[in-house]
Length: 277
Image (cartoon, rainbow, N blue to C red; front, side, top):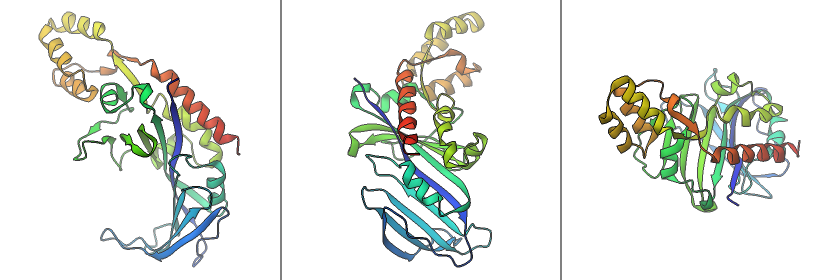
């Protein structure tokens, strides 16, 4: 049986806190470091970061405090999952219980596809579609990107050696989370519906329908030949057709059969996640 596993990979939030309040002790986590933060830009944000590590897994928490600008929230917290287990309800609840008036900045969900599924870099290039996000050209050719860090979501696709799986990571940003009404931990049950099929699915091109359209509307076999030459990449194919005046590309797309298994994997993940609520 081909295997698809969904995990909650990262959660980032900001929170109000009383002036001068330091990050708390956390059940199930040990403090490993508390140090000054080296500024990576011209704007200093937080002076210190307290780092935690789970006592039972490789999950980590980075808790930034002592804000350097008045417009920043007093605390900024980033939870990073253990690769094999993902973040649990209990771990997130433990953090949120210490935060008042928090707001999620990022919720990152990872889908790991075992080799038996046939999902790899070439498969994603040929069949992956992530809402309205466009494929981004970057130097790291081993990693595929859609969107960017300033858009509603940012997608990374790459081979995860630690799990021997091909990973698709969806980094959902605050604007999208607000639109989907995901503002508390209890709202996480809406994540599967928010992700699939609106922001992540696999599709195939209905070549017969595309050919009928090109021949009927444009009387052009030449365009069809050009489209076939670009079938290894949905992004290249869409750009090619758009340049030649063929719009509403989604008309020629049909869901791939693997979507049913992906939908079940999302449902299974949320069911397991809520069992600990």
